[in-house]
Length: 266
Length: 221
Ligand SMILES: Nc1ncnc2c1ncn2[C@@H]1O[C@H](COP(=O)(O)OP(=O)(O)OP(=O)(O)O)[C@@H](O)[C@H]1O
Ligand SMILES: [Mg+2]
Image 1 (tube, chains in turn orange, green):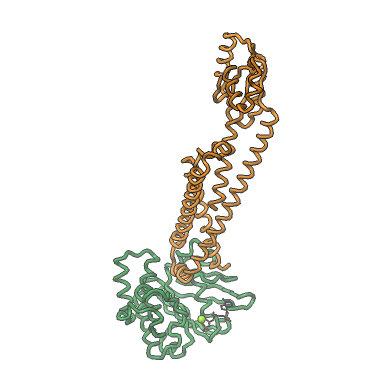
Image 2: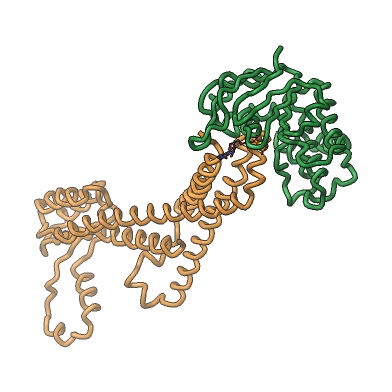
């Protein structure tokens, strides 16, 4: 269960890391006037869809290009002019119809003076969106499956502990104990087991995370950036605890109800 | 008050009780007699809704037993003390703990439990064995623990299913006296037995069953 939880959490954080990388690049004309740039700057900063943006001048673009192709510097040296345009990199907030939002934004931007072109990997984003939806459904299904499994496991454990004290419970029923006083200890036991499960899972996730961080920091960092930073947010942990306790409660409730009903002859 | 009107009960199609009707007044003492398999235990089990019945009406202290929902059963059962034919003592608890358990279940305070348990065990002459476990006692002693437990919550109604079981006559009469004593204090008692000596010795109205039918009934008024 802990392992599943681990996979679940990391897939989720990986997806949100990718999610943040969806961006729109606005290439500018080489000879853009200072006024046009100012206007563009204002326009972009007013758009609520844009989470953040960054201006990359021609020089910066060249420096970046150079550093990523330093091995082929022979070839580069032969170029004595800078062919790269200046650009804006916009990070777009995530929303349900982001693709439409991006299209709209790009239409506006491309018609501005001084803008040469706008790129946003239309196909890629479209595919990415479907993939995200698929992954989310997949994760939900996985989570429900795991929860169901946990309910079954806990209900079985409680069943065993109920059966081991069958005579006592029978006598309680015969003498006139209230249903609540019969059930309470077992419901508490179920909740405690849920709590224990959550505790073990979360510690396991933490442990693996720390291990990964120390062992593979360098090589993994680039590959799974975002995963590395994200352990579990506080709300996440609280949700896991509450869900687990609820699962424990459900599990014990089901088996208790079954057991007690067997004593009520129709 | 206990009222039965035309009660029928069968187990998987085999009739166990057929057309049973009788009334026991508050504070009454009634024997249920009949040979083995006549339906005595079944009749008692219906009164505290451990078994259901197929037809008829059963009223106990005004509660319609047949209409009782599972989560309301304790309201009926708290009126009733039962001496089970198989005692139902918990082997893992001492005699004292067994009797105390019945009081814990109904929420008696700790202090009252200690006092009442002691009194109940003294009443059946077993206070010196309070720390023994059920299996360390003789059959008659276990029987008396079961009686102490049934009486300890001072129920309005006492149902005793063969409380003299296979005990020798002397102890049987002592046990009968215990119930008559409780009855004099106002407890309604229904005493099931096939023991003829007991039936003759105690002069009480009797419902005689044979193969689930009332064959002779001196219960009235
Ligand atoms: N749980 C049960 N399932 C099926 N049949 C049962 C069940 N309990 C009792 N019976 C049957 O119902 C009939 C009456 O049984 P019951 O136990 O009421 O008799 P009894 O008068 O108490 O006998 P005894 O003196 O031996 O205790 C018997 O024929 C018995 O086999
Ligand atoms: Mg019987």
